[in-house]
Image (cartoon, rainbow, N blue to C red; front, side, top):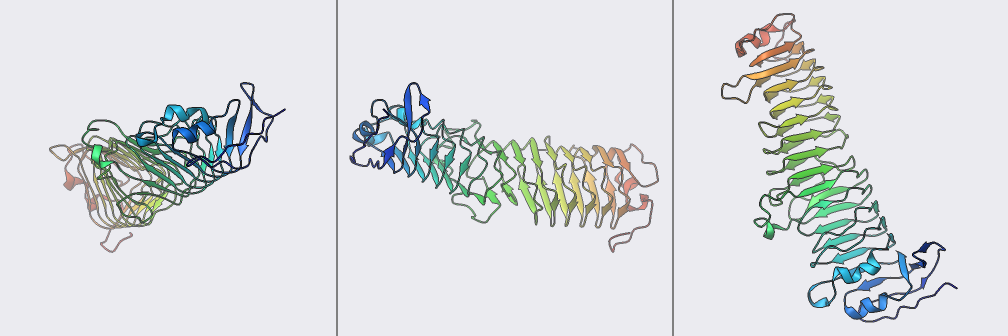
Length: 379
């Protein structure tokens, strides 16, 4: 006969309507569902929750856990209960300054999800119907999360000096549905992110996270998988050695600063609707066919093989001491509305005229195009 467990209300423990609703077995013990709330913040509340022969795999209400400090309990003490929970119908609020709470089976949360004090072991988490709030030292990484309302990150600035040289990641690589991601204390405008006070090394955002402006002074790896057309895009990441974006169009200005030895890849980008300014050791955007403003590139290796039209001026220089790039591939560029200046050892451009290897910018100006150009725009 399956046991029906009664949890009494002691201190902050609230358990109502606990009943077994499954014949599934875990180590010979029937798994149970709690229809009410579960709050553990003291030894007595923990004792009431841990009943011999009973596991809870689902909570219909809220889950609240506090450990460390004056609570008298640790995350290890709570593991017996927390490690079996795979779904919470309400909100989850965790405050564990003493260490990582084991939520290793948790896959869904019906309300908000708040983790403070230490990162939780929650890599299986797939969906949060409400908002996520994270406030602790270390990585903000949810590798399997796919759906969430808003994500709010709180930088732990007091430990920044302690963490000097330590790699910290902010990664939500599989998120496909998200209203916004924001950093506490900075702009709450959607898509505006400033990591100046939050020294992270790795940034990886899934297709559902929109980024229009990103400042990341110490980041070395940045991957943005959102493909939506953007009104404009600004990224200032002077230490980024690997930077990639997946947007298909930037309808206004594009401004990118990466490391002078880094790589910037925009292989899904089809059009730039305004001015474009790029600084990176290597730059490729091989699906981009048109730039409706000026194109200014500081890079040693440039590849825009399908670019056909630049309405404004084109300027390309290298990042070395002599400002001469190694190679520039504009294989289909035939229409430049303004001046054309390319300083590179190897230039591939559809002008109908040969290019020398001397890297002389004056030999790659608007006079080298195969058709006349004026300052008015399209030829």
